[in-house]
Length: 64
Image 1: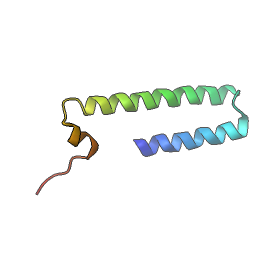
Image 2 (image 1 turned 180 degrees about the vertical axis):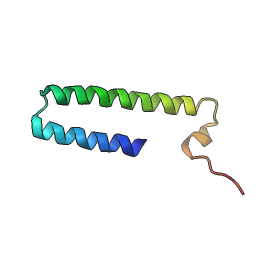
Image 3 (image 1 turned 180 degrees about the horizontal axis):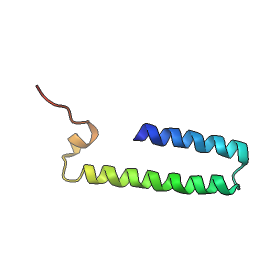
């Protein structure tokens, strides 16, 4: 998901460069990008709820 947000941020920068900061499309895109980032933060917070601090930083892997 973070790669997806990085790609959207790059697209936002390209739109800003091409159309300027005051273009309605750019402003709407920034707003939607902000919503997507906030959703990502909330999803991570919900995923990490009740986990130990050590486990929050490291992804979980299967132990064989």
